[in-house]
Amino acid sequence: MHLSQNEDPNFSLSKFESMLKTNDILFFDSSEFETIIYHYLETGKIALAKKAVKLGLEQHPTSTHLLLFRVEIYIFENKLEEAEDILASIDHLEPSNEEIYIQKANVYSKRNRHHKAIEMLQIALELTDDAADVYSLLAMEYLFLEDYENAKGNLMACLDIDDEDYSALYNLIFCYENLDQEDQAIAYLGKYIDINPYCEVAWHQIGKLYNKKKEYKKALEAYDFAIISDEYFIGAYLEKGKVLEKLNRFQEAIENYQITLELDDPTAFAFLRIGKCYEKMGVEDLALHYFNKAVEDDPLLDKAWIEFTNFYIRKKQFRKALYYINKALQIDEENIKYWKKYTYINQKLAFLEEAERGLRKCLELGNYELETYITRADLLIILGEYNMALQTMFEACEFHPDYAEIEYRIAGLFFRINEGDKGYYHLKNAVKIDAEYSVIVSELFPDIFERDSVKHIIGKYLNK
Image 1 (cartoon, rainbow, N blue to C red):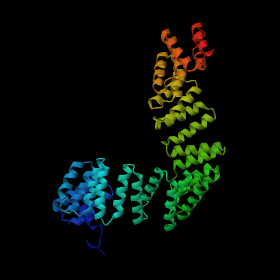
Image 2 (image 1 turned 135 degrees about the horizontal axis):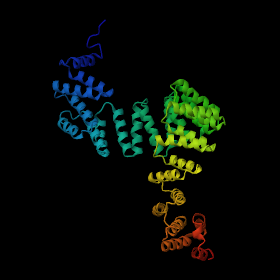
Image 3 (image 1 turned 45 degrees about the vertical axis):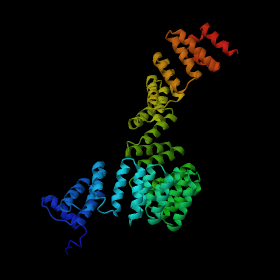
Image 4 (image 1 turned 30 degrees about the vertical axis):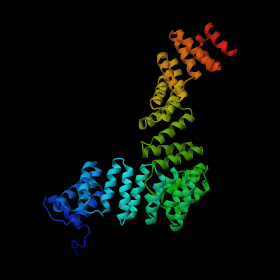
């Protein structure tokens, strides 16, 4: 039996797409255009939505709803002035249309005028029959302002209307955490579960909060309830596995990770965690097997390459470690921790130029620790790059003024490049700060340390 136009909910859409293929111009009433445009916007087909808006306004130029769809598309395309022009033109047509104020709020939000956006949404809230959506939008604006208390209130109002809005629930817990109110979050979720006892999302969030508080037994209980509520809830098995790892219950953790592999497509994360468990259990062949499976599943998972790196560092197989740290750096070359490992490995292999490069990258990436500067300078001294070592120490002074470790090195370097006056000046500064550190000169510049003039200055302060 064929469905009529009124019986078939997809009739308008099929008719519109058929029209596009034939280039015929067919008539649609404004509500049909609204259905078509909404469908395309929901499915992310913006180009088709724009075509539908254009044709719709050609047939119904005064339709406020169609004009508002054009505003929505303009906002999406960041054409904010065009959106504002339309909003100004229709403002007086339907002053009780909450969508006008919602779109005004969207424009203000795009301009980072979040307080004005909130004003518009509060007007919309008085006009709307769908308060949950407006509360949700208000919460987002408060989140942009990092006003977590007000965001929290609006998210609660949203959940009071629709307790299955899990996006609001996640954001609410996010607010509690940013306010350091974990106990209050747990209390809220407890009341929520009284009404929704089989809500796996709520149990999962309770587990994460108890995990954060290091109350691992309660966390495990919460994850078990999440799994009882939904035996296919992969997130609960993963989080339960992580807690079991912390409790050194590695075999049980592996079992939970294995369940996730059976429930859905295997993930590199699960393979990686299984590998870590086997490594902690001392089963090295299985640890490497699962690390391999992790990188096979996701070659861009830098954490898996780092596990290989750490494994071979512990085994003192530094050439293999170097291979794997290079793999990790190819994926994330701005990770300071990786460059520190790279430096350590190259030092162990006596690849001093590469080790120095690693420290230089650490400094370029903003790691201004004293140890980084000093280690780099010492490597440059060994490599005979005295001027570069001096520059490194002067840069260190900007972040770590009046450190004897720096002044002794500057003194020795000036002596090394035959600028004795500057060397004596910095040597005197160094011994005034801490004469005991003069051992630095004897270790890095033994020939300079043997000079009578140098020994005299150091001895003068050591004997005080």
